[in-house]
Image (tube, rainbow, N blue to C red; front, side, top):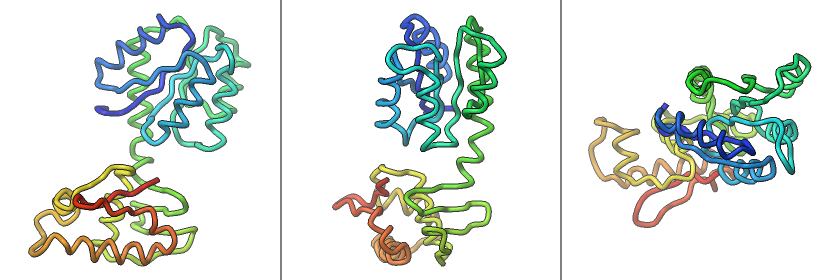
Length: 225
């Protein structure tokens, strides 16, 4: 679970610190918010790198239910674990109806919380890898099919692997050498500029969506979300 990021939302500083201390020991990166308003702001700015949200129900400004609804309106897949001092059945049912993945009542064992977080991330990891998408560009890694706005796009094997690698590393500048080592591996002889011609073909086949692939002068390329 190394390098995964978790957003911890709770109005109690002591609770946030307790959760953070245990999760950091397992190599998770932690973002914190003390109320629902701040949580939505942090989520909006970091949605591409947040892998799971731990969300308290009772908070000032904007409560957990509202935060949950707003996030689910645009993201149905990110795992969300609700933390609450209430353990009433109707609250749990409401949470599941709104799209909660796990429901944990306070007080709870931090070790159990970490175990549940790890289990949820393991369950969702495969799903995230199977489908990669951005702005209508969808890569189905099971069927090895690429679609743009639901229309199939024919890519060669190398073009497919190149687009997949770029989209798996959204917003990260990738050098030509790194792309060669990952996409071409040992099956390459010649000038590294061959990447440029493949990028040109991929951009053309993506049509207007090819604009997401940016040339980073002197370095390589980046897929901008």
